[in-house]
Image 1 (cartoon, rainbow, N blue to C red):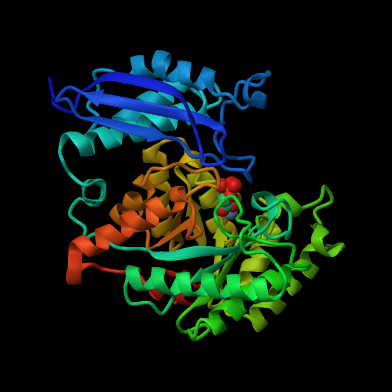
Image 2 (image 1 turned 180 degrees about the vertical axis):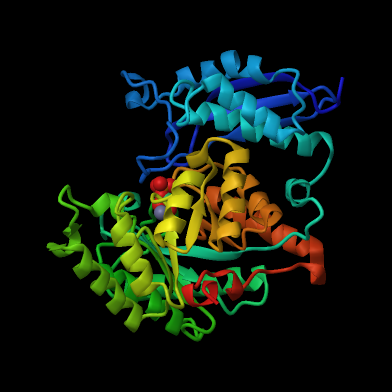
Length: 434
Ligand code: PGA
Ligand code: ZN
């Protein structure tokens, strides 16, 4: 038998960083190697993501994943045992076929992804190859430009702000380590400013960002802009700003944007005007989910209006799904796509979206979830797939720092030969159309 043939699949109910149950899984291969994966989970999920199977009922307030665990140890284990884990496409095809639905509704995307990831990690273990190197093949590894959460709102911070994230993007850094150091400086300066304004920097949100009732959404953006200034970095040249609106969360049934923190309700054109005004005032280089997931027309308008010199990033819009990405490309919606493996359900389908994005001139940004885990594989995916950008949350909490630490280590291991993506990784309509 092949050393990398799958001989055993086990699973259990684990916890994510928010303390909610999630699927943990070990895949063992014939040579004795094994891979262990714990699946992340979002709070502001897009409705077109693959299914996250939860038990309902009384256990864990309905959030238990016992059924998903049984699906792993039963149907899915039977489907992959004997297959070569090194043939990831075949493993993922078998997992998908066992479920039989596009959205993985029968067995659960959380069950399927656990096996898919654990199989990949088992190959890295068995072949004693760092995961990023396994994924990169002949290509050189590439350290990504990070987006680091500074101020949180929305579903990650008790609705203190309506927009979900205001992040720093250290665009002028010349290495990943410098990018982290500069991001730290901005976060520390923003925390100090918040304290001076009478706020509390001890309260951190789900992704480790500052959580504070700042009164208005613009005040959240301004705090990060002032943090950049206070840190001594040049706004726009050294450090810029990214915003994740997570508009699904604040779009009313009639399609209007509800800014509860400001007691205002805006139409789509009014909202685009508002964001355009922020773009005039602050060094914003990336805007994620500026509108809701099915507002294709609004997205095309927003991309036209805001996308010159700026990244328009689709998260809930695309949900790491190649068909939705193709629709976006056809409609001129967004110019970049967030890649979250658990939106896609398998490693292979997520990688397919990275490839499709590149073909279309869209930029991939790999991302953690707000309910993440103590595992670092996402960092290896960023480097091995050469995504060029990564979004992991803030600089506190171990489920975040484990990924930053992995990237810092990979860069240190490569010394002067390490390649860092930098500013060029950002999407920009003017560049795309050239
Ligand atoms: P989620 O949010 O993981 O809670 O869905 C992350 C994001 O919107 O980028
Ligand atoms: Zn998002």
